[in-house]
Image 1 (cartoon, one colour):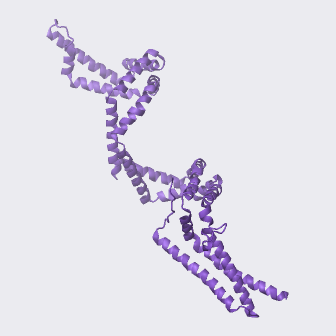
Image 2 (cartoon, rainbow, N blue to C red; image 1 turned 90 degrees about the vertical axis):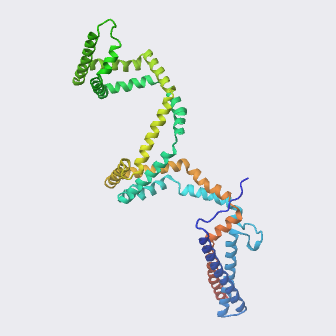
Image 3 (spheres, rainbow, N blue to C red; image 1 turned 180 degrees about the horizontal axis):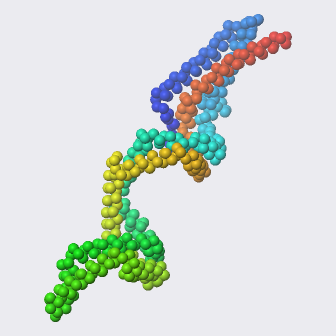
Length: 422
């Protein structure tokens, strides 16, 4: 069973002491007026003339003061400790009070028209633009974002990456057929000639390697030379082959329309088509995918890549002069400048903020207002009444004071009417 919760002041002990002192002062004033009226009533009892008016006013003042004291006290406790019906309302009916407050907030504050109107009236984007236009504020935003990003990156450990790959990516990758995807990507790359840069890079590297490593080429080809041929003949043939390979690669590299390039394009285009339409090619691609996924190096590679990426990002985020930090500053400044100049953008962002707030309220508003009821239901009734009285009791004492004064005036008027009627 949940134990009652005593509501506490957000202001701390000093504020509570000040409220308590102010409440005592106003109670003293109200009681003093009552005692003064009682004293005047006793002194002027059975007096006529002017003092008769004073006596009537004092009598009515006592009645008003006592009635209002009863009304104010009945909110928080039983007057004089007597269990009079319909007293101590807050301790007894705090749950109904919480429910009513919940409904009041929901019906009068968490409404789409009200929320949308207030957010649009505030002009969030304009205020953000003005605030970000100050360089110190933009720098602060970037520093805070960089710190949060660095903390978030530091929280992701290698075992998290391993778990992500094993539990989420690999099973999903197994289910997804990769052949049509690869075929489509290759088809798009060929249509945009994206592969030509990779082909040129491979040709350059292979051409330079052949020139720089003739001994290795000689050894590789020499292993296939016939044993019965004279060594001089084999050397001549190998040297000739090496020279022709260098020349052939140089021709392919220098001629964008070389037949070898066209043959490679045709082969890649056929592969792209087979990956999308040929069942046998697709099956081979899926088997290759499974072997790659099952290889232990996949996990190690993912962890290594993440570690390197994280280290690079963290270092750049920690360095105020780093590329990431400076880029963030540039983007924040550009965004602020655009917000200042572009009224349409500000209007779109304000409406987007209003839409988001309305969506949040429609989806979670009932849960937010329910917190009021649930919280008040868990309050201890007596302690809650004391706390509420501490916050609003001083103002309620004015009811007693006004009742004393107004009652006296009404008493004088009634006495005057009585005198006139006789």
